[in-house]
Structure formats: structure tokens, C-alpha cells
Image (tube, rainbow, N blue to C red; front, top):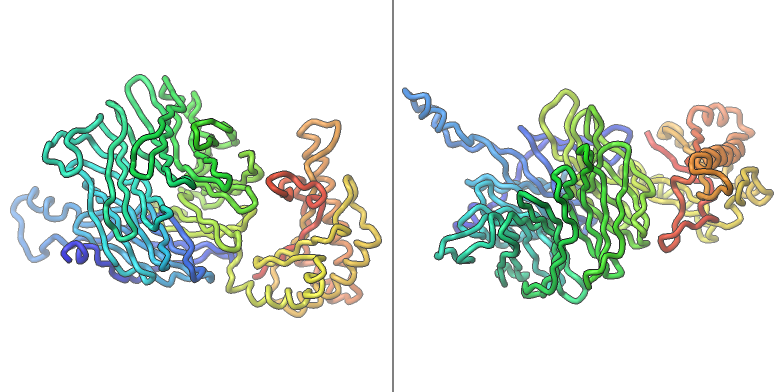
Length: 576
């Protein structure tokens, strides 16, 4: 009961604001630095993220008189510090819940895991070196909690969901030499990999250390289909640094160990960040690779259950970049989030990858200061929720940040503004949708799906079938938009191509396709613009936007480019 009272979560008021232009971006301002490190989707389609914010610790007696400066400094020390914080937002980008753990010991949350009852496991650590796991119900009320670890300094890196309803805590622990230590009589080295398995009821099933005589740190883990556990960690000595892959039984016994990357020079440092299991039961690890001039870039390693490396790919970017988290879509593509740095600031990075781990596109988000994405969750509708830090202009304080992205890494629009339009558009074009002529997404993209509406290779002029369809389509669409013109910011017409262009190098292949995609967009724009009603034309001249995206948004089928579907034009309605 005493522990439960220490972890009692208290509802707090907060100040949060969404970004302009109806984009799904929530910034939660708290005193001093705050951040969100993990995110998940709830069964009611809301989004929950965890991290920390700073809370005052009222340990000073304002009526007391001090004659010694050192006594006074001691009285106000640790007056504020970090506390685990949970934030829930709905699909309108409104913060509907925020709770904070008021512990006497400052602490941070690093991970959130959903339970079958729509509750949560929260994992974290206290700043003085203990580990925390709490189970919450759907309203974020405490069910039970555990403070555990060794008598020395421990740190949790992640909390991993397991198929039996329990969780696996992964982290590190400083070597214990105390024979009375309840977990370990001796340590392995300076710092050891520390793994603890919990049942769904919060019982510690086992807790073990792994490592060498040097510094070892557990980074992340994932459960394989057979119940074994794959762990990624690091080892560092004065002479070398290693990234280690390890497979354990469900009881924590080691099956194999692979010291995959060995670096003898500090400037070639490789730092693992995340491991995930793919649908084919292989595994991908996201790493940050530093080169000889200390510029970091992205490295992805794919391996199987039997210690075989299937792929090892480095992704070079113009600016130093890293992926902090990565997830797989149902079609085999992947999205990673992290950061990208230039000389002046750091932005949040969202990167789309194909099944072979090649980059398809990247998007940068943030302001003029420090912004970073730490975690993502793929939602039920293939959109992506992202958690991280945003720093306002002319500020030195980080704020909790939640954004929602589309599956192509573009920023999602607010459901509040698009839901009515989406319903009306789908009703308006119900016949075309039923005939598989087009589809409409919830962020108001109109995608033509009939084969006759795709372009032939190299073609941009409309065929008779395309012209006939677009005349009928534009009459309905423009009439609807003009009726709601006070709510319309833009109608974007985006031309696309497949990636091939024979007999030219990459530079000319991109430029030729860019020119072709713009011509395709113009052909459709021209047809939409040619309205008999001059008032509608006047209005369209203010909202129509044509662009060419070359082959940057290729359509994929089973992880491979579908050239026919890539030769297309899409529309998107942007609301005010």
C-alpha cells in the first residue's frame, strides 16, 4: 500500500496547442524541460504517450530562517525534477487526459505497452538508480506497481510486450559486489545487461545479468514467434566497441551470442537504437553509424532466428541523421522516426523504407530550434502516431510533442476538420467507389484506381476515356467544393511517375520524370479548370495547385514498385 501511494497518479491541468493549417500536431508546454519517449494506440482509437515533465518538490520551509548559506542551498536542492507522465489525445488533437506519478524520488518513463483490457504497462527508472514497472487500467489508475533492481545503479532502456500478457524490462545495471544483494552475488563487469521478465499479474518470473568484464548495456529486445527473446546490446572497452545480438530462451538462458559489429576506433562508433520482428519472423535493428568526421547516418541490419545476417544497409543522407524507432506496415514497407541535424538546428525525421531497407522518401518536421522524434506507433488506419520533443522559437525548454503522420510520412490533417468532408465525399462518389474507379482517404486524398485512368509509360496527354471520366468527375467535385468554398484552402493536383527512364543516368532520370509528372498534373488541372461557370473558374484560380513529384511516391505491391499504378495523378483537398 505504501508503494501504491507513492505511485498514485494525480490528474493535472495542462496547456496544449495544435499547430496551424489543421495539421495533427500537439505541443504540451510544461515548466522546464519535458519529453515523450513512447507512444501507443488505445482500443478506442485515442493515442497515449509517456515520458516525463518536471514537477516542483516542496521541500523548503518558507518560514524558516537560515544563518548558513550552505544550509539554505541544501533546503532548496532538488526543488524540482522529472516525474513519469502519461498523456492521452483524441483524434481531434485534444488532450483528454494527463497524469503524473508523484514519487519522492525523481523518475522518467521510457515505454508504454498496451494490455488486453485497454490498460497499460509503464516502464521507467528513478534518477537514483531503481527500476519501475506499473500496471494501469484504461483510465490510467494504478492496478499495481513494482520498484525493483539491484542495490547499485540501474537504468531501464525499454519495456517489451510479450505474447503471454507479461512484459520484459531491458536495461543495464552497475556491477554488484554485495553478497547480500537479493538478485546477484557478483557482477560480470563494470556495467551489465540487466533483463527482468514479469508475468501479466506483475510477478517477477526471473531477473538475470549478461555481459563481459567490460561495460555492457542492454538496449532493446523483441519476442520471436517461438517464444525466444532477441536482445540487442553494446559492449565497450578501452580498445573496442561492439554491437551484440543475443538470443535467449523464454527462461532467460542464452542460446547464441553474436558480436556483430566491432569498432577499434572511437570515431567509427555504432550505436543500436531499436530491434523489431518482421512479419516473416526475421528481425531488423536500427543503428546510428558515425564516420571518421563524426557525422552520423542510418544503418539497418536484418538477420534471422539462426544468427544469419540477411541484409546490412547504410543510408547516407545530406545531413547527419538517425532513426530512434522503426515499425513495419502490413504491406512490408517500414517507417522510421528520429532526427536530422544541420548547422543551425535539429528537426524530427520521418523516413519511409521499402522491404529491402532502401529509402523511399523522408520528411523533416520542426521549427528553428531542437526537435526530435523518439517513437512511433502504426495506427489501425495505417496512419502513424509519433512522440518526441519540440522546442519553441527563442526558447531553451523542450516540450512534449505528439504528431500524426500519413503512411507516406506527410503530416495528417485533423479528423475534426475532415470527417464531415470525408463522409460527404464518399457519399457523393459512392458509385465511382463501388465501381473501383477511385478511393478517398480520411485525409481527403482522392486516388484514381481504375486501370484506364493510369498513364502509359512516357505519356501525359489524356486519353478519350480519361477525358470522359474527368469531365463527369470534375462537375461533381468542383460543384461540391465551390459550395463549401469558405472552408477550402487548396485543391492539390499531384502528378507521379514510375522510376524507369531508359538510357540515362540517375540525375536525368529524375529530372525527366519530374518534367513528365508536372505535365500529367497540368493535363488534369486543365480539365478541372475548364468550367462553364466563370465564378467557379475565378475561385479555382485561387485554390488550384499543380505539382510534379517525379517517382518519389511510387506505388508498391508486395514491397516492389508497381510501375502501372505509379503512373498516375492524385488529388488532395486541403481545408482552412
